[in-house]
Structure formats: structure tokens, C-alpha cells
Amino acid sequence: MRLMAVDFGDKRTGLAICDAAEMLATPYEVITTSNIDYCIQQIIRLAENEHVEGFVVGLPLHMDGSQHGRAFQTRQWGDRLVEQSGKPVYYADERLSSSAAERMFPAGVLTRKGKKKRLDAVAAAVILESFLEYKRQYLQKPKQPEHIQIFSQITAWAKAAADHFAQAARQAIAQRGIFSAALSGGKTPVMFFDALAELAGLTADDWRRIRLFWVDERFVPSDSPDSNFWLAREHLISKVPIPDENVFRIKTEKSDVSAVANDYQATLRTIFGIKEYEYPVFDWVGLGLGQDGHIASLLPGTLAVWITGRLTYAVRWQPRGLDRVTLTAPVLQNARQIVMLIHGQEKAAIVRAIFNQMPDPAVYPVFVLWPVLNKIVWLLDQPAASLIGGWS
Ligand code: 6PG
Image (cartoon, rainbow, N blue to C red; front, side):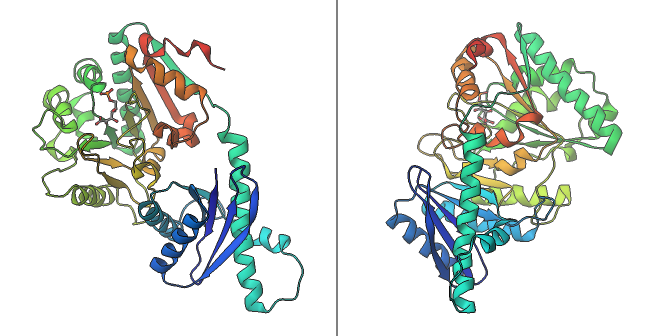
């Protein structure tokens, strides 16, 4: 894959390119401007000339690896690159790039300005090199899940999912006084919701401390049978003593799906009390798996898969299906616990595929979770798990 690395800077943005065989071709170019729109246009123009298929953006992080405002801003620039180029953006830690670039820098007679400029391009090359190394080590072989449970009866599967939720809720309430969960839609959660309402043994006191959010929502009125909120209301919310003010549905009443996404992002920031550059920490996120490898509404081939500088995103899916609003990949990754709820024979092929392939989110969006694979619990019924015997 031909990739371009971008080391965004306030005055100079360094670029590097690798060839299709993923050998570093060269430190490539430096764009000298502090106008980010112009900079992005130039990057896209050069990428088109060079037939680049995707970008690697250097992410400035704290020394402990945590994100700060500057890193979030870089992600927002990355989102603009995604939206304007239509190409994937991967991120690579840039903390060591400047000093490594200094070491790699060839001796020569350059002015201070010329040296600075050259260093930026070399720094981009270092970012690209380390991303390619990471890819060689981790992305080119299948990685298999650690916590997987298979149930022979669908009723046992539903009860286990409900028990998992209830246990996580009791634990969070004991430790922090509150439990925040994000629910998915589709057909999968019906039996889980029923079991949660009827069998999980959560008390009225527990429900007072449980907050419900949604992983994604279709852009339909909340009383439509296509609405994920409607499904949860029918099978769960109407049957349990959860106070109305603890239910944070994605409000689809606005006329534009982007406005709905923005509104939900603002709600999350307020309720979780987080800064503009922070992601909320859900205690529990329940996800289904689409037969095309999607989770939430990170649908294959949509830009939503690559957006990381926002908490929510509007996915324009018409005419293939309904437009949707989804949590973005970093919000899902940031949850304390992620539970993949999968049942039915029709999921067997995709389950086998994702456990045996190179984890590229461009192929199956569920792979955005592979950096946090160790915190995912997989609950499968026998038919869904029936083809995974042949793990390589
Ligand atoms: C939705 C989702 C979606 C779902 C999968 C699985 O609104 O459709 O939240 O991500 O979990 O598409 O769908 P099924 O459960 O219908 O197979």
C-alpha cells in the first residue's frame, strides 16, 4: 500500500512517502504555511500526484502516551484529510520522531532555516518508518481473542449477556456510584434486553444509578420500529424502573443527521463532564457484528471508520440504507468493558473471517477494536461459533 506520512506543524508540515512494497521511498516534501486549509489542499494534491492510498499522521502525545488538546487537534485535522481526500488515515506516535530525525539527519551545509525544513521531512519519514514496523509486527497476522464464551442454547447466551451487564453494573455502582452503558440495535439484542429486564436481578436502587446511552441510531423518529431506542424501550426500558432522566437516547428529531450527531456529542461532553479533547469512558459497551464486519455504524467503505477527532459521526448511508449516527472508534475503544454479542448461523462466516485475517479496518471495521482486543468479551452461541474451529 502506498502511504504518505504527515507531520503536521504550526508553520511547516513534513511529508514522507513509501512505495507500494512499503519500503520508505524518501522524506518527501515540506509544506510551509500556517493556514491549515491550504496545507490540507496541498497534501491532497501531492497525494493524488503520487497515487497515495492512505495517510499516516503523526500524533503528539504526552510522554506517558496519553492524549492532550494538541493531539485531539491533530485528529481533527486528520478528520478533514479523511473527509476531503476520501482516504483512510492511520495514526502513529510521533513522540520520538524529532530526536530520531535529528540522529538520522545527514551532515551537510545548510542554513538554520534549511535545516529545520529538512528535519520536518525526515521526522515524517521516521513516523512512517515506525508505523510500517508496527504494521509488519502486528497488523500482518491474525490476532485471536482471549475472552471467548460459546453457549449451546440461545437462552443461556442471553442470560450470560444479561448477567455480564448486571455484574458490571453492580461493580461500577459499588466503586463509582454510577454505571454508564451504551447499547446497540439490530436484531441481536432482543433476547439480551428481555433477559436483562426479567432475569438479571437488578434492583430499583441499581436502576436509579444506571445511565443508558446508544452506540448508534438510525435517522428515523424514535417511535419507528427501525429505531434502536424504540427496540430498547419495547424490550427493556418499559419493563424496568429506570428513571427517564437516566436515558440518553440519540435525539433524531432534527432535520439534519449531522445536527443530530453534534447534539449527541454535546450531550456526552456534558453528562460525562469531559473536556473538548477527551473521550467519555463508558463502563460497558455492547456491540453486535454485521455480516459485513461492521460494528456500531462504522460501515465498510464509509469515512466513519477513520474519524477520530469527534465523539460521534453522521453516517450518510442512503440510498443503501438509513442514514445513521454513531459513536466513533476511539470512544468505543475507550470503554472499560466491551462485549461483542453475536448469535445465529448467519454470523458464522464473518466470525471465522475476522479471527483469521490481517486486522485491516478498511476490510472489516470491527478491526478498529484490535488495539484493545484484550478487553473485549465475546459471547457467541454455537451456530455463530460453528466455523471457528479452524483457527490458524
Ligand atoms: C444497528 C447496529 C449495528 C448492529 C449490527 C448487527 O443499528 O444496526 O447497532 O451495529 O449491531 O448491524 O445487526 P444485527 O443484530 O441485526 O445482526
